[in-house]
Length: 429
Image (cartoon, rainbow, N blue to C red; front, side):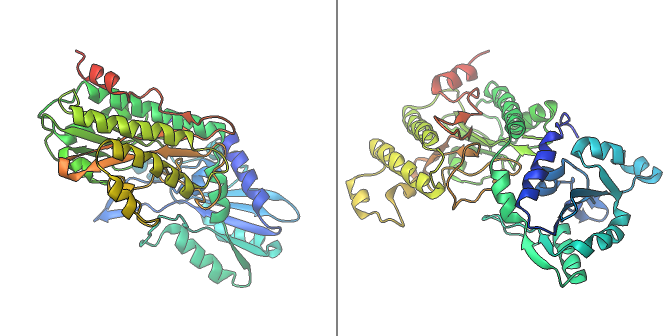
């Protein structure tokens, strides 16, 4: 791994929190993701399942974590692929039992070949089997995962065991970040800052969107980020009105803006930044006015992220602020307000997406959006105004940590966002 070692106290604490939510005489299993094939003998880069990483820190394929809560003990067992000389020669070092303990804090480490026999011995005192599935509100999984295959196998093998769901527990636990996690997200944000500062002096009329993407990629890799946290959006001109534009293959022209929705990953933790900059290094008057409206909405929206607030209510309150700005810009008028409905508020004509989402091990991280916001939730704040008939859109986005009292902490406070600073940096030699 490119990232520095993480203190295993994080994973020890995460497992303890999970065990405290388990029923008596129960066991929970968590699996690594598959190594997915492309075609022939080609594989996609391995991407670890975030749940097993959250609970163990293990970043290796073919790993299984078992957490047991019975009358005799509360213990954990980790199963790993057994290293051998041929595997090491072709793929490099795999985790030893000692190294796995150092990373995870788990003392009971076995090879994956022993899994069935050891599970058989555990099941005598177990009454409840926790099944882990993907229940994220935005999930749409069509591929059968390694976790899904394991779930099918173990339910068939032990059909008399009662089943419970792990995901509701993880949705609750993963949403509230530990200090080490916030530090890791901050590292990802700091790397994103370096990438953004790098491109400010690089962008000029005639540059291609993919060249800007390449500059970000260079800076991210150079600073121990394995990759983009998500597919980057480098959207110039009319492309800035496309919310998930990822082609990044157009040439940037004088007079246009570029919407940059880019974030670095660090140690599997995501950052998520959006900035909008002028290709020429100077915003037009109209671009400036729209930009300042979006910036004002972003700043005010962040202040509204406080414990006890509901996610949907937060967006509606932000909509009121956005409506005021759209009126100032002449994009809405009194007739628009008179004709709006609760289901279709007027601001949605120009602000077409949500204000915030949870951030962490996933860019759209776990978190029950129907429960009140809590301290140490990490959210994005990302309002935007998209004006198709004027050929540009502007979105601004920061990542913030909700505080028990007071305004959230902005993890991207050092990333340039004020017009004057952006223009100054773009025009510096």
